[in-house]
View 1 (cartoon, rainbow, N blue to C red):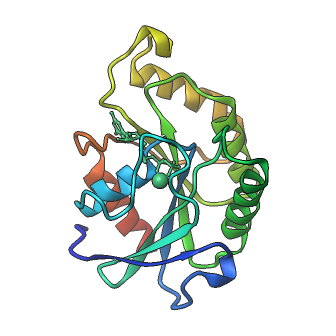
View 2 (cartoon, rainbow, N blue to C red):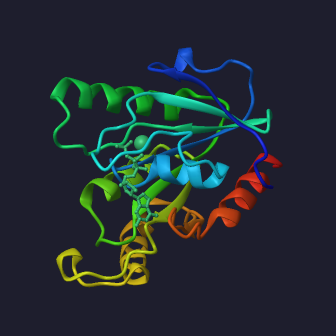
Length: 202
Ligand code: GTP
Ligand code: MG
C-alpha cells in the first residue's frame, strides 16, 4: 500500500473543475491548522508537496494529488479560520460542501481532529453534518505526539479522543473508523494507507 509516486495535478474552486478521469479519491478535511497538508506530506514521504504553514488558512482550493497514477489524495481548505474574510469563509463552506455531496469519485472523507486539545464545537458540527448527509467518513486524530499541556486542558490525546468519540456517537448509524496519527513521528501512516487500499478495493 506504499506510495511510490505523487504528483500535484490541479487546484480547483468548483466540483465541476476537478479531474474528470474517474479515479477514486480521498479528501482530507478539518479545522485550519489541524495538519491536513502535513499529513498528506507524511503519507507521500515528501516534505513540501502540499504547502504547510504555522498560520491558518494556507490551503485555499481543492488540490488534487495523483498517487501511483491510480488514485487521488485531495487537500482541502480548512474551516473555522476566524481571520478569513467573511466572503471567503462562506465560499469555502459552499464549495467544500458541494464537493462532498456531488463528487461521485469521492470514496471517503478523512475528517482530521486535533487530539492535543479537548473537542471543539465546530469539529462536532462538521462530523454531525457529514453524518446527517451520509458522507462516508474516516476519523483521523492528528498531533498525537503532543504531550498534555495545562493551557490545552491538561488531558492526554487518548482522553481527548475518547471524549470526542462519545460526543459524536449519535450522529452515525455505525461509528466511523478512526486512526491516531502524528506527522512528526509518522504514527498512523501505514494504517491510513492500508485503510485507503481496503476502501479502494471494495
Ligand atoms: P490549513 O491549510 O491552513 O487549513 O492548515 P492545515 O490543516 O493544512 O495544517 P498544516 O499541515 O499547514 O499544519 C499546521 C501547523 O501544525 C504547522 O505548524 C505544522 O507543523 C503543525 N503540525 C501539523 N501536524 C502536526 C503533528 O502531527 N504534530 C505536531 N506537533 N505538529 C503538527
Ligand atoms: Mg493546508
